[in-house]
Image (cartoon, rainbow, N blue to C red; front, side):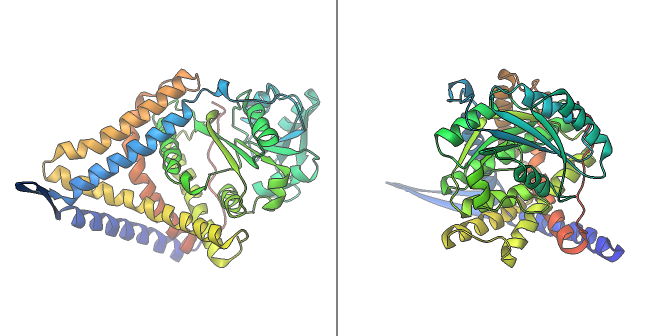
Length: 429
């Protein structure tokens, strides 16, 4: 990373963020007039643009959050499962994950699906993690430890496991995931009996502290935002908490070696018309970032990867599928980034409301966010997934973070990114 590029990126981040905030503030102080003709009288209502924006944003939060709430509270015990059938290979790519590998491997060993093998794929230079993987392989007949044939790539690690397996489907998890015992059985029914190409569950950070709760709320807001997109037929499928049939994997030619290989995979599945069973009521746990720097660094990596996928789409390297689906895919990528910028606009409009003494309109979106997040957390608490996080009151902070991350990541990708990626410290807690 050059010094010039770093200085340009950081200066651009400050300037661009201020410009977006200024745009929101200037538009927020304008008055909007609404005229209502009510038989014998005409009513004219003048309202700050910032106030109407607060009302609309609150509605967006309640609607999207309510849809997520309805999905995750669905009783997973009522969903059909299949505990035996064609072979499934669970793939766990690892790199410097020796301290957390027990979470995924031991929870997968407890899976209720019987015809399951577990392949841990490590890097050639990661002797410590490979030693842990080989220890599990020596202890359990269904666990295999192997070395990535395409070093330095999570997509390559997955491909390594696929090439050495004859399984009919592949279940993919991160090393720090705690997988629910019935997860693979539910996915097996969706893939083998219902004919879906992909089964996608939900993965949530464990909210064990304030930073961890912030990460939990950010994921909840992220998942909720997708509920308004799913009527278009686009479902988010990842490279974690995911089961993919061999046919679907081969149709889209697997995962690409990108910073966010899973986002590219989701768009390729959409473009090729792969049917995705999105079941967020089937929830697995992941370790959350334990510091603000790790929280920011991890989310910046994910958002930089989103910019990269958009760029690769424009370049034409991620193609395939029908013309209509390619256009919708591109629109989804672009609108997601642009939409994130408006969270900064909303933040500056809320500042207008504070200065204008209109606290009721300022508190409306904050209350909508907190209550929505509290409702989602209550479902996870009752399901035994989490301890109830008191830090949910911090959840309004996640929305302006979306906008700041978008500005930062776009500039990092354009000016200073050298191909490396940020790694979060994992403690196994």
